[in-house]
Length: 96
Image 1 (cartoon, rainbow, N blue to C red):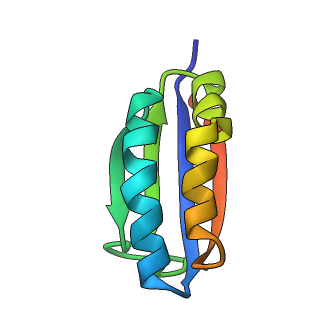
Image 2: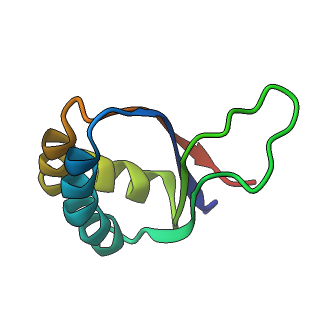
Image 3: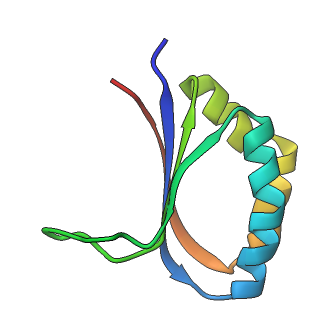
């Protein structure tokens, strides 16, 4: 079974306090769901049409595991805490 990667790019952070509340809730939920944080922060370098925006990369053992973590009630509570505090693009992609 191929690993899966949760890639989240923050297009805008509108409320740092809401983002902090989200992170406090989401980190433990993602880890409990089998997620392993591989990278997070601003890019060291951007090329082509890349944007210098906060990005988070999380590895899971499968797409099903990543989807289950995202759809869990505990993660949905973290998203509720984030609310309109950030504009993000979140994707779950299967490894090769």
